[in-house]
Length: 258
Image 1 (cartoon, one colour):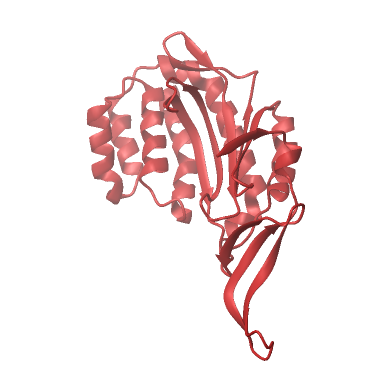
Image 2 (cartoon, rainbow, N blue to C red; image 1 turned 180 degrees about the vertical axis):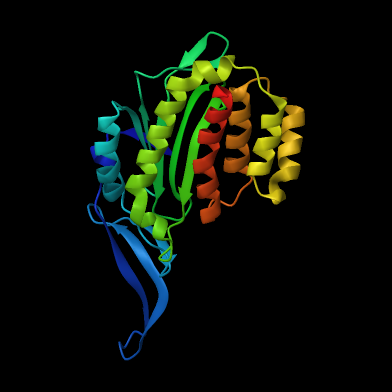
């Protein structure tokens, strides 16, 4: 069940309560290694998680994101809550940037942020241009950036969400502004090889399969190939993946201008 709600309704207070086993006579108590995530406004139990789970509240995430989104002229389009608030999705558009997803078909970039209190979603930051084309939720479009961060106490990336959000938005704006040059420049085959070499050898088979099925004609097509492999085939929890992602667009942009 999902419910369209306003921004304020997604920012309900939550708290963690240790899950403790005890006998009826209160003579024995034992920590179970788990904790409950509970809404403070209505006392609904959202989940029971292990103590390794690191909670990132909706309020913390949005307070980090809003100044960056505002600086980039992003406008909130929707805030959707699932169930009792276990999962939430927010979507913004950047109205002053247009991206062509098909011939003479332009859409504004979207910034989508997701969070959950039950472990069903990681902290998810995605940018792209999409359109629902079927009632079953099928979409068309392009993914321009995709970052996922596990709710784990050892995940230091959760300390740098502002940087992740800013990089995703900056990258999206840059690609949108440079789109005509990437789309119009005919691809030099040597740069296809250069892209394959940019990725680790474990990705070679996936890249070859993608390139055969979607033969790139220009540098926009090449960027889509790189983005698809990075977001669908590589380990999102590996720091090397994020380092590689930071190299994709600068290299393809440089090749397009050569």
